[in-house]
Image 1 (tube, rainbow, N blue to C red):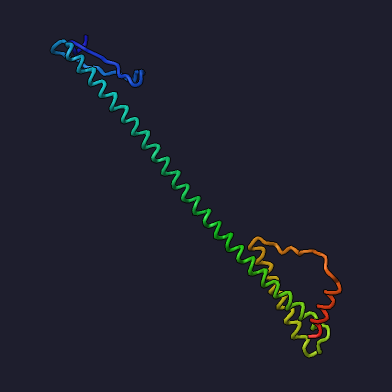
Image 2 (image 1 turned 90 degrees about the horizontal axis):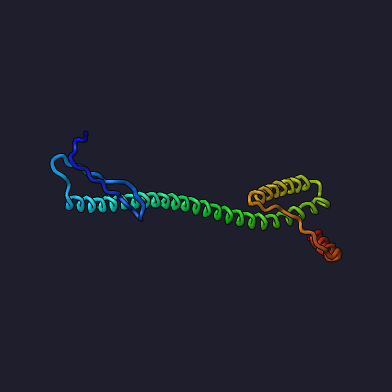
Length: 173
């Protein structure tokens, strides 16, 4: 035996699908047509509230997902910016190292040529200068490795007569 004298149940429908039921009971009097209509309106309001709650949950979930994606994008943009800065530093380093290497090769070449005919008293000084130039050239090589620019010799045909003429001019100085 039920403690209620009358019980009424209405289905809760959302988009043609039953998502639950709403039931009421009365122990004092039978439920009339007006009670059933009120129960149906209450069921409609409950369906709207449930639907809104589900939509809010979906919206909150999507908002959290968008925030996560935005934070990830910010991190990726910062990493890209850092990589671009490092690339710029590498290019600058490579350019400076290349120019410095060109200067060093002239210096080392002239010192090496000077050692050939130098008086004995100057040879230790010239050898020290050549050694310092070679150490500097090694530092340039390390800078080029840092900047990911290896020093590749450029092989190209040369006019030997012009090369010898320039070498003789350097030796005469």
